[in-house]
Length: 468
Image (cartoon, rainbow, N blue to C red; front, side, top):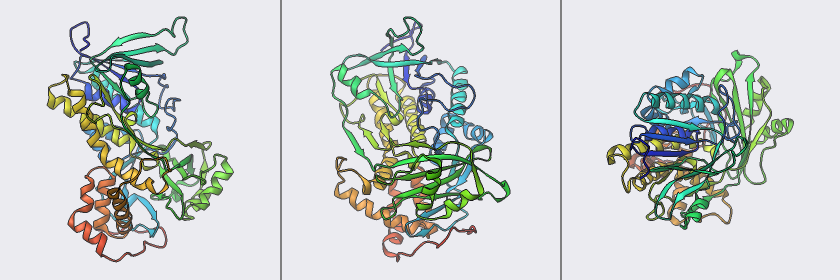
C-alpha cells in the first residue's frame, strides 16, 4: 500500500472527466489524498474541451443515473436545473416513433430524464465534487495537462502511475512516478489499460464487442419563434427496414440539439445542406418539418466511435491488486442510447458502497468493487447490445441462444410498450436504469407482451397527453 507523508492512503484517478470526478466522490472519506491526472486543461466557464470528443452531441441523464448522482452528491440535480438542464418525462415529453407507429403519450411522471449539454454537466459536477472534497478529510489535487503513460508495479500489484507534463516546458516531457495504494482508470474509451497490463507482464482482460457501425452527426438549433417551439422532444430511432434515425431534444437556454444517425452505408453527412436533406430520409418526416421553424446555431459535428465494448475486469484473476476501472474505460456503449453518464454514476456509487461496507482500502477490495461495478453495468449492456445486434459485424462476439430469444422478446415488448401503459411503464423502468431486466419478464408484463395481439402505434405524433 502506498502511503502519503502523513501515513495515510493515497489514490490516483486517471481522467478528470465525469467518471473521474465521480470516482473522486466515491473515494472521498476512504483515502487521505486523491490525485487526478487530466490530459487537458479545463476551459474557463462552461465550454467544450478537446479531450471529450463526443461532447458536442446529445447527452441525457437517465432517472437511474440522476438518483445515483444525487446519492453521491446531494443537490446536484437541482444545480443542473439551475444551470439550464431540461427536465423531460419520457412518456410525456419525448415523442417516439417506433417501427409500428408513434408511441402514445401518457401523463406518466416517474421517468424523469435530464437533457443538458456536456460542458454544463461536466462543470457543475466538477465544481460540486471539488467543493465537497474541500470540506472533507480527503485532500484532492488535480494535475491538469498531465498524461498517464503507464503503471508501476508488477503483474500482481499496481503501485502507482508514471506521468509526464503536456505543457511543453523545458524538461516537462520527462516522466515521473506517483505512488498510490489504489489507481482508478477513468480515462474513457481511449483507455490504455490493456497495453499497460502487457507492460506489467499480465494478460489483458477478456473483451466483448458488438459494433452496429452506427455513426451520427449533431447540430444545434434555436426555434425562430419560441411561442411555436415544440412542447416535447422527438425520437425516431432507426430499425432494420429504415436504418436511419433522428433525435431532436431541448437543452439549456432555449436551444435544441438534432442528432441524426445511421448504420453502415447510411451515415449522416456533416455538410450542412446534406445534413438537412438527410433528416427527410429517417423513418418519419416530422423532424424534417420542424427544422423549417428553427435556425441553426452551429456547424454539423460528426462522431463514429460507437462500438459497444466491454472489458471483463471483474472476472477472477483479471485484475491486479490496487487497480480499478470505472466508466467507459471498462464498458463503453453506443452513445446513441444515452446510457454512458448514468452508468458512470451508478458505477461510482457501487464503488463507494463497496468501500463503505468493506471498511475502506484493504487487500481484495478493488476486486470486490470491480464486481459491483460490473453488476451496475449489466442492465445497460444487455439493452445496448440487444438493440445493436441486428446490425453487428461478422467479427463481433456471437449471440447465444438466450440472447437471440431475448432479442425477439424485446422487439415484441417494445412494440407493445408504444400502446400499452402497463408494459410501457415497465419498459421505461428498465431503460431508465431504475429496475433490473427481470422487470420485463414479470408475469403481468410477459402475458401482455406475448399473448395480447400486436397492434400498430399512432399514425402521427400525438398532440394530446393521455391521463393514466
